[in-house]
Image 1 (cartoon, rainbow, N blue to C red):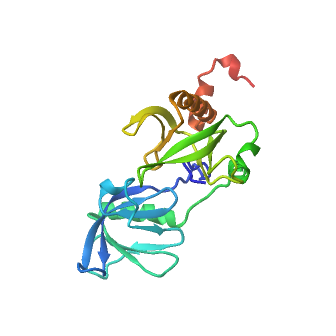
Image 2: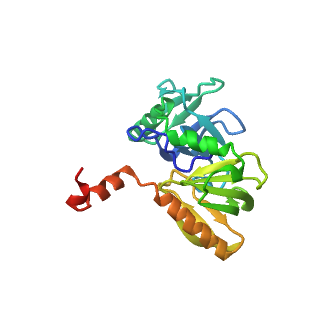
Image 3: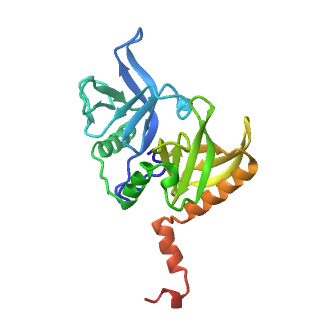
Length: 261
């Protein structure tokens, strides 16, 4: 599943996230030395980098570095300040990076060190969704909404058609109604559902994440009536899942006689 909102992580030890420009040492091409690149540490513990900040979300990353099990630490051998190394577990190459200040270097080292030793918490919901994703679309019991949706592929600016099943805040994506299992899915807990207008479509369903670390998704049904049906169903399905702090606050705000055990 493509995780929209990662409910499997332990709330006390969230995945690290970090963004910013770093200089990356290179030994290839005509220009040897240091190149400024835009780095993004994702919630899944992978470090992406791009040529420019504006490329994030629009272009594929130049490279993706899996940090789990990697060795990360400072490097004073070059006589240059704020330099640190990252050696992925595969060990086939090392990445030499340089920050702009000691504070920036510490920020990156702390975030990357957490990503190298992720703390996971299993959740029964993962088992449920993985089981559902292995089923044909019409075998999922009591879906909250089903039908055709077109999803915007941001990398190609093309709309891809899926047969979709919505169940308990999870949107399962199938190639067609005759597929034997889901090709992917989205955990949408915490997402906001809006109706937007894009240049190529008059009415589009926008799924906005709870934080910028997660992706924004765009879907479009066959017509505006179908769009409204999906928007209503998505809002109701997501609304079932309350963040813990909100559930506690709602409980505390209830009249005293309703909260007595």
